[in-house]
Amino acid sequence: MSTCATASRDLDEPLAGTAATARTWLLVEQPGPWGAKALTDSHLAPGLGRALETAAQGTGVRAALIRRPGRHADLPPASRHQVYVAHTAPGRTWLRSCMVDDPRRLLDLDFAALGSGDHCGVGTPHTGAPLALVCTNGKRDRCCALLGRPLAAELADAGEEGVWEITHLGGHRFAPTVLVLPYGYAYGRAEAHTVKEVLAAVRAGRVVLRGCRGGSAWERPGQVAELAVRAATGEDGAGALDVAGTREADGADGADGRWEVTVAHTDGRRWQVTVASGASLPPRPESCGAALKTPARMDVVAVRTIPDGVPCAPGGLPGPVGP
Image (cartoon, one colour):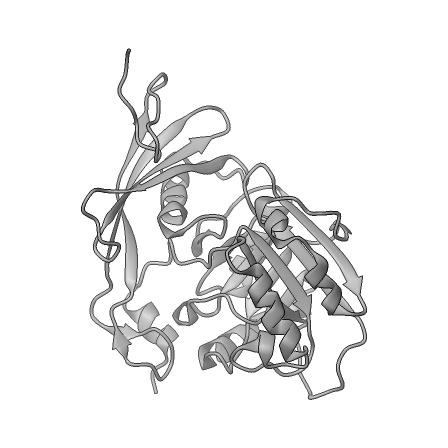
């Protein structure tokens, strides 16, 4: 039986602009089995999972569970939990870690502040290996288990210290999917050798484009626009580019619309990227067992350099020159 990942790969569905959106990630270690909605269906107290989801809503924070690769027997609840908090905005990226005995303490955090880039003193700066978070939740979609778990195990067996399994990264059909922190770039159809390349690049402060779905700090048009500028210029510095503005073109309805995105470099250069949204054809399953659909896709129409001295109007578009 064909899987959603096989269909997506066979149709060569674009990866760019498909990453989950989160400026800040809150990751809580929770060993044992996970249900389809793991925050409320695991050994983590269901009430706590719902409370974390509620606290994160609308703040730019995304909460998820993590566990080390391997077998996940139905063991008693963990007595201590590893926690990571990462902010992914360029120029303000950080990754902090701590151990907690009672994860309910996480509800005392100021989620709005975390989402805006204030670490609120949680934990200490993470000085170990970058994190490679592989989606493995087979209760969410079987492709994540069939493809994600072997990848996580292979990476761990190869000595990659920062490898964890994660509950959900979105885009089952792009499995195996991986999120790399601290910079927050997501990858699809990942293989062990490419993840190792990505992690080596992260250690050097660089971004690998091959297989990249986008940076989680931005919405989908910004993700695909930033990757397009990297492809056009060869820029691979992790913090070199930022999405300075996004405006939906007049008359766009969000399904078959266009966006004008301004991407800015730390050296002052800017680009205007036109991004079009359309339907992926022919129809394909977005997850295994689901009805055939035509998921939205993002395509770059044009990348234009904004000349020096041309101001940007609100929304990120170049404004008029002169008085």
